[in-house]
Image 1 (cartoon, one colour):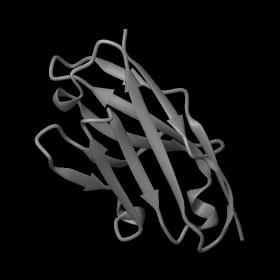
Image 2: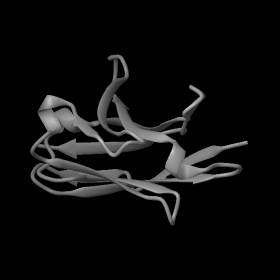
Image 3: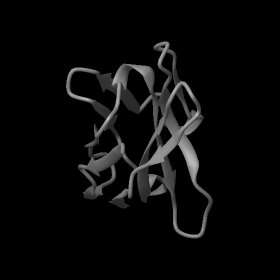
Image 4: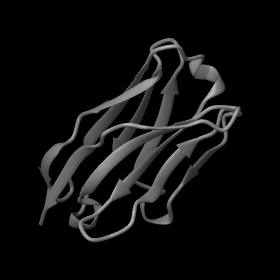
Length: 117
């Protein structure tokens, strides 16, 4: 069974940076998975922040495009989200997501990011 464990959340002030990490464990061929980060702010739906498809294509949500960087390390089974110049609108629970080539969806339990003004 594949599991995703996020880390790196916390409380920061506007303009500061955080790096989130997600490590996959279990019976996984990491290179065959598309990976993504989603976030869910209080009272709102869960939305895509950034994704790195197994082909290498990377996509970002418009509001983070120039501030966040997603990367994948297949040797460490880890996907990282470098978040720069954070603002209060980035406050949310951030979830790691994986999709296999066969269409299997896997979610992490989430890590909380809080950005104060």
